[in-house]
Structures are given as structure tokens and as C-alpha cells.
Length: 362
Image (cartoon, rainbow, N blue to C red; front, side, top):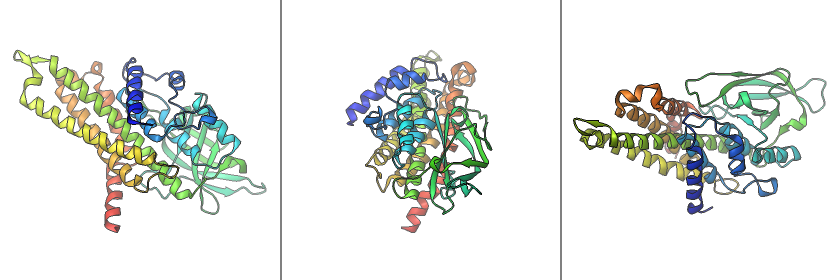
């Protein structure tokens, strides 16, 4: 899609999501009706045949509205994972259900701090032909507590990364909600202690498994970076608007040099984050295998945008004065969301280490 179409998508999303107060639950049926759930689902499966660049637009607008929804687990990670798997009727059915708003998924990937260690492993089940036993645990899995299907990254007995599709209520499986300060997100601990998995519930990647896993991790990182960009944009706009109407010593505080400089610094951070996230989204959208440099772009976007969002939200709280520290201002919602985003899908420090390792090895 062209930049013009993405700008139109952004404007429509901003208008629809902006009608609800920050922190509200996004209407899942509204998102499905707008086509946002099936952006990357093939047209033959009731999707829109779009790319990750368009999905990233919605991710940013959800962050800008501080909206609560399972979009990260279902669309960003769920549809993204299914699109990388070998085609099968069950896979196609799940993709169609995502596009129609009938499925909520959660994906447990490797920890962003240790990308080479899938959280689950498959062992051959004794006395069962083609069956497996699943063991392992993954903490802080987005949307797992409300998902109807879990897609768990695991190593098969041969050490190959695969996806195990299981129901949350299966025997020897547990999903425990993990409350966090950010009230707009739902995370959970997923544990498996010998859960029996039939052979047809183990899905394999269509191309080189490790490259597919790396691409999924990069998708998650860029999506969270886009969410943080939306948070930072919302805080910048709110602060500029407040500085224009709040008066002190008989004039708007926006006329004071210190406030001007602070807002200018926030604008610079938001502008850099916008460029980095857009570049990373475009690279991840480039073809079925993505761009070889997508990992570098993803780490640059995640490390900068997520750290910048925390800084911008903190500045917004300060520039709102005493009002910024009140519950009614709503700024705390954005600050808590930005703080959680900073930790999800690898911390800024972890992504900077990844960048440093690339240059050191190069």
C-alpha cells in the first residue's frame, strides 16, 4: 500500500479510537468490521492482503489511545506466526477466524533477552504414536488469559523450533494472570507440565525455522515500539495543548522559555522515534522473508522509541504541574503503558547489546 493509503488508515483509526476515553476496552467487533484484524490475512481467507506496515499503523494508534485490546497477541503475534507456518486447513481456519473477529490468540515466544531459548520443549510421549508431551513455562505472555488458543514456541525432540497449538484449558496446562501496573494490558504465566500434544497440533515453519523465529521476535519488538510512539505522540499533543491554555503570572505557560525548550525536546524525541519505527515496519513488510537488515532496524526502533516514550510521558506529567499527578488527568495511564512497553519484547539495553554485537562482529 502507498503512504497515502496508510495516512488515510491512520486518520480513520485515530478518529474511531479517539472517541473512547484513554484506557478503555477497544470494541473488538469494531476493529473486525474496520478490517484491522485481518490486515495481513490473505484475501482468500477474508483478509485484506496488506503488510506489516499497515498493521504497524494500527499498533501506533492503539498506543495513542491507550486502548485495551488483545491486538498484540492475536494480530501482531498470532496472525504473524500463522503466516509463517506451512499451509494446513486448521491454520487457514484460524487465520479466517482472526480476520472475522472470532478468534483471540496468544503466542509465547522466546524471551527477548535470550532469543535462542524457546520457552517450551516437546518430548515423545511414551506409548503414543506421533504424540508428544509439552513441558516449559513462559512468563508475561500478552493476552494469554483471554485467549481461546495458545501458540507456543517449542523445540521438537530433534531440536527444531516448532509451534505447539494447544487449548488453555488442556490437561497439565495452566494460564495464570500476572497483574502489572499498566491497567490496559493483560499478561499471564503459561506453564506446561507434561501436557499431551497430538502430532497434528505441532505446526512447522514454511521456511528456515530460526529465521522465522527471529522475524517473529522482530515483529513483536517493532509493534511495541509503534505502541510507544503512539503514547509519546499523545503525551506531546496533550502537553502542547495544556501549555497553551494554562496561565501563570497572567500569560500562558507555553510562552515561557523553559516550557518551550521542554516541548521542543519532546518533539525531537517523537520525530526520531517516528522515523525509526516507520523504517523498521517497512523492512519487516518487505517480501515473505523480510529484509535482511530488518533485525537491525527493529532493535534501533525498539531501543529508542520505548525509552523515549517513558521520557516524554514523564516530561508531560511534570509540565502539567500538580494536575499531571492526579488520577483525573489520565497521564498515569500513558506513563505506565510506556514503562511496560520498555520491558516487553526485550529491554532497550538488550537491543543495544544486539546492535553492538553486530558492529563488533562486523
